[in-house]
Amino acid sequence: MTGLMEGLRENLDWFPRYQRYLREHRPPALIAWGPQDRYMPEEAGRAYLRDLPDAEFHLLDGGHWALETNFDEVAALVRDFLARTVR
Image 1 (cartoon, rainbow, N blue to C red):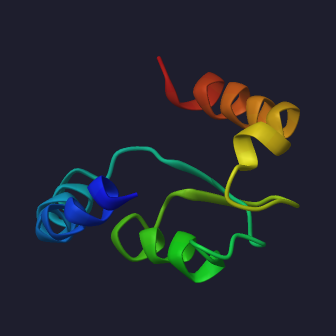
Image 2 (cartoon, rainbow, N blue to C red; image 1 turned 180 degrees about the vertical axis):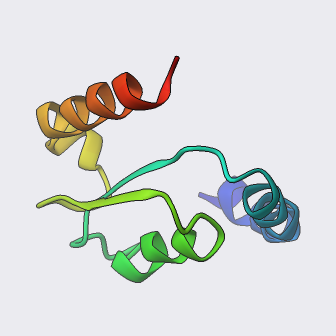
């Protein structure tokens, strides 16, 4: 846990570059979010839409580990997304 907290500053410093990249390049994006996440609430997921307004945003009935708890639902979303966006 200490290592994670020590790296937090570098992560925060990196965010403006990451956000600029998303705004400039606007890659296709699929966001599957668990709104019951106490660490990264729904508002944190929706914040990505400021930089990627065309992203698909899906709220799942789950929390932080949505891929583990909602695997079938996430897999279906990913398959559909890739079928429509990858050529």
